[in-house]
Amino acid sequence: MIDAIASLGRSSLNALVVFGRAFLFLLQVLASLDIVIRRFGLTVVQIYSVGVRSLLIIIVSGLFVGMVLGYQGYITLVNFGAAEALGGVVALSLVRELGPVVTALLFAGRAGSALTAELGLMKTTEQLSAMEMMAVNPYRRIFAPRFVAGFLSMPLLAAIFSAVGVMGGYIVGVGMLGVDSGAYFSQMQSVTDWNEDVLSGVIKSIVFGFVVTWIAVFQGFNAMPTSEGISRATTQTVVVSSLAILGLDFILTGLMFGAG
Amino acid sequence: MAEPVAEDSPHIVIENLRFRRGRKVVFEDLSMRIPRGQVTTVMGPSGSGKTTLLRLIGGQLRPDGGRIWVDGQEVARLSTRRLYALRKRMGMLFQSGALLTDLSVFENVAFPLREHTDLPEDVLRTLVLLKLEAVGLRSARDLDPASLSGGMARRVALARAIALDPDLIMYDEPFTGLDPITMGQIVTLIRRTNQSLGLTSVLVSHDVTEAMAISDHVVLIADGRAVDAGAPDDLRARASDWSAQFLEGRPDGPVPFHYPGDGYREDLLGVRERRDD
Ligand SMILES: Nc1ncnc2c1ncn2[C@@H]1O[C@H](COP(=O)(O)OP(=O)(O)OP(=O)(O)O)[C@@H](O)[C@H]1O
Ligand SMILES: [Mg+2]
Image (cartoon, rainbow over all chains, first blue to last red; front, top):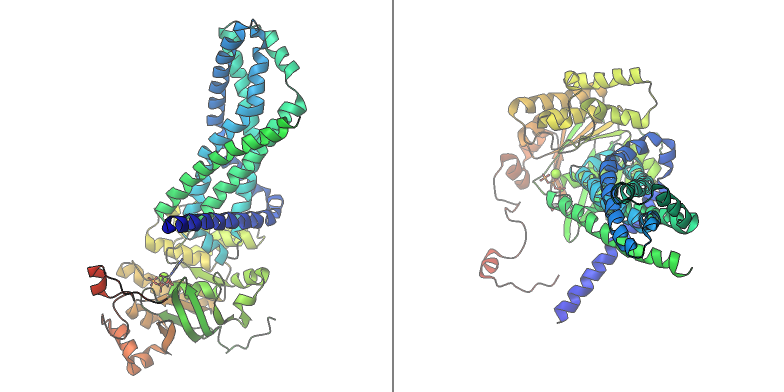
């Protein structure tokens, strides 16, 4: 019994220590951000590997999610004789929720895990140490550009996801189920509000991008320098990011729509 | 702060260094001087803290007590900016080579130059090829670090370490895991680098023969202290208990074979004496 309490205490203390380290790490990275402006090339390379390389999975998933939405939305709406409202339903679900959330989950699996593994390996093979000894600050040269790249890529990927999803809904709803093409887009335009819907989705995707990249880069930095350590850190990135995304989504949705 | 340093003053001075890793005391009370412009080898058994010592000198770790001066500057007291300035004048060769795996051999050697200088591309190219030529790997410049052998990787790392023309270079176990020919090449390279660039070389090693052959000055460490120091020949002649054990490679002696811990018998029988920590 006492042992159980002690081990509970110990693991909560450990969790606090890790969180503290993650926070200090973030502060250090934020203090190194000037490099992003001074040598933007470093960040561009990372935007390519974090963002551009995630494009395919984002586009394909967006298309399928949009198509499923078109289907499900139609089945429900047609009962009420409101099938032409499909465009609005698809667009709202994507822009408000599915775009940011599914993109962030995919982003954590595709880009986050790759970032963690890359940085963990750099640490294990002493590349980060070697850099420090060459008087090159890894926070500036390595962490900050990756952080900014993830942070910038996420909202763009989410926007692409939503746009492709709208097209997926169009293919199913208009192309296959016979909803009127003009109604699909005009409905979409009339129910989607810029501030309320689009902007709130953008804010969500910015927050998710920040959190996922933070977790991924920190896990790589904090990994035990062994092959097992890297594999554990990579798993942790995906698990912790996914939970953080879903939890934060709830909180953000409450904040943005609850009060209004 | 950076007063002019006399030509004949030691390059590195370590006084009463104390350092702990968790509960394990790595250095108890370590003092040594590393003379300028010579090859000094720090020898000690595996786990005696040789790598740790190099990291302390490079300012990657902070001592728990005592002081380390490099070129008259106390490493642990330097601001980040001054520490980085000091490191630009230090080269370090890691045990594993630690090449940047996403860059080619050429770009690895060019890395410190690109980071710290604004040289035009053609000058940079010339410099890099010069350094690669010095280690005999000019033609391997387009290879990937992953496709290098251990010995080649170490030579590339050496080329990278001397890219900024440092005045101090530190080698961590430069001889381990090499065949006799490659070993000979590395020995020659270290010696030649030291002479032609006039820098101070610090080696950390447990390969007695090579290390004794290459050095002007040897320091033996054990139990967290420097137990003996001097020119290789003096050391061999003098041979305290400890040095004799180490230099002749006897398994047991003043340096115990066993990592300190519970008694063997207690461990096997599963009974454990209660210890006060
Ligand atoms: N990151 C670490 N965390 C905890 N203890 C460590 C760590 N690194 C090294 N140690 C401990 O510090 C001691 C000295 O390690 P160090 O790597 O400096 O030895 P070494 O002399 O270089 O050994 P070798 O010749 O095998 O390379 C060892 O006993 C080791 O257990
Ligand atoms: Mg070592």
